[in-house]
Length: 386
Image 1 (cartoon, rainbow, N blue to C red):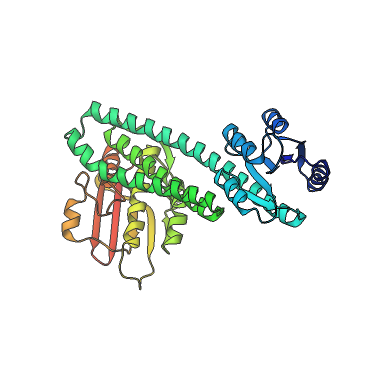
Image 2 (image 1 turned 90 degrees about the horizontal axis):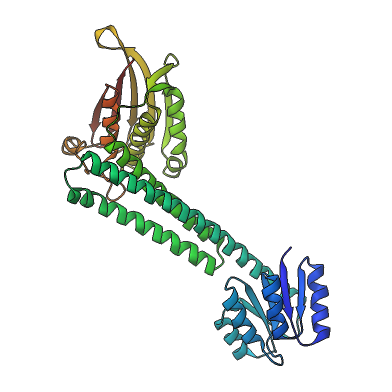
């Protein structure tokens, strides 16, 4: 039940408003003057305030200013005399959410109160969004610090300058995205547009995920310990990773398909590493479709698993990611496994394939790539069965 404080020095009006608002489901507090109203406000903390402007002692404008000092999130609606626009404008300048004129009409007042309640709900939602965002940002900061420590310890990057050069532009883009999300949420709140707030929050989430991906790739690239192998089912990891990209692929009209070998049972691999490698490969394949300029294509990304005979009479696990996107020139293919080389213009930092290659090599496997510009790319991962 929404708590509202009603302030008016005319007892009949006060009683009428209490009766009317109570019948609409409000928890109504009343005060005949500004001094009493401020005391009740401090004790009861109502979410809404409806106050007359002209009262003896502390007038409505002063009550408004003091309430906003105590709690700027409270929604205050002022009651003005008919035609008293100067006072109404002054109230709005001091933070009132709306004004209604005397003689009061129930339907007008209820519309104003509903708008105020909606704004309260949006503020609460924004508060939740902000708290959630701050928590995720702190988690990402911690992850970045851990990644930095690992990189310094292992000295896998040639120099601090190279690291900064490779990361600075990408992180700047992420911060721009976060700033855009903040702007849209605040604008949506100010204009009472929940759709804009939701779009802004989606931008938050997307850019937080980009930070998370960056941290995971940096940590994986810096890691020097042997993979923590265990019994895993690749045919379960593949659909799990595909689900991550279902929404993005749908937005860009990219079909996701799987062709999984039923004879491929459990394999002795590191779950986290192989999952990360698949995330990078599938993400690259979808991006290749998104960047394709041939709009006549029906884009598709297919992930296949096979168990096949390998060298020395052993068996190999084959994981193949195929796309019919933009493909690559020979020049691009020659630079793919160079650190910080990327074709994604601000959307990547050029570690994804390096991380994938590292994971595959740690498992004693190899990664093969076949690509033709304008036709698509096939990436094959071959892992020995242990």
